[in-house]
Image (cartoon, rainbow, N blue to C red):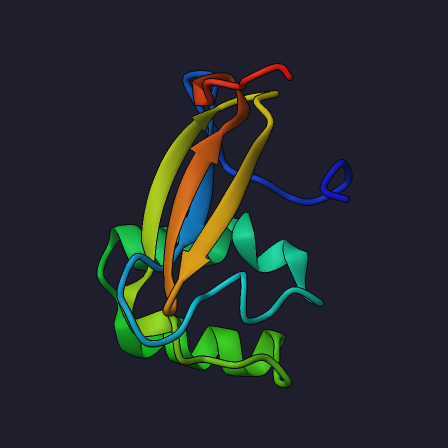
Length: 106
């Protein structure tokens, strides 16, 4: 799903965008547009707290996505090549790394 997407990588970690605030998720409410999880331009706008520029960029590049989770965007730095998923509860997203799970075998 994400092999050919443009990503921001720094010191072996990939910037992953998610929305930890309650109310609306970012990627979980826009599952048809997986590239918004990694978009380097969005990462830079969030890092620099450029919310007006972020809104302009997102509405021009992704005109049909739901913007509810955009105001709470955060960046998680995930080790490159790690398997992860974004969980959502009541709009609040969190990052879960596969290797951090304690699986139980039946």
